[in-house]
Length: 71
Image (cartoon, rainbow, N blue to C red; front, top):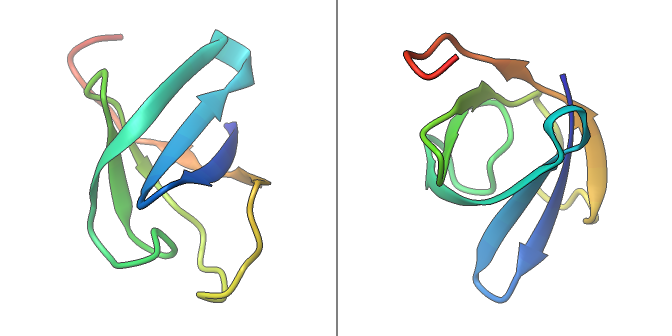
């Protein structure tokens, strides 16, 4: 699913156009988000693609939404 990430101060936000959803990233498995799992404020989790740590933001990427109980 396509998502747009941006850095806001010291934190990250994600926008999911398909759901018209904007949430803060509340957990990141790896520093800088890339290549690990992130969780957003509504409880959804995404597997993020591998990207260089210095990737400029905002950026739209293809992330895999992981199964959860809220769908």
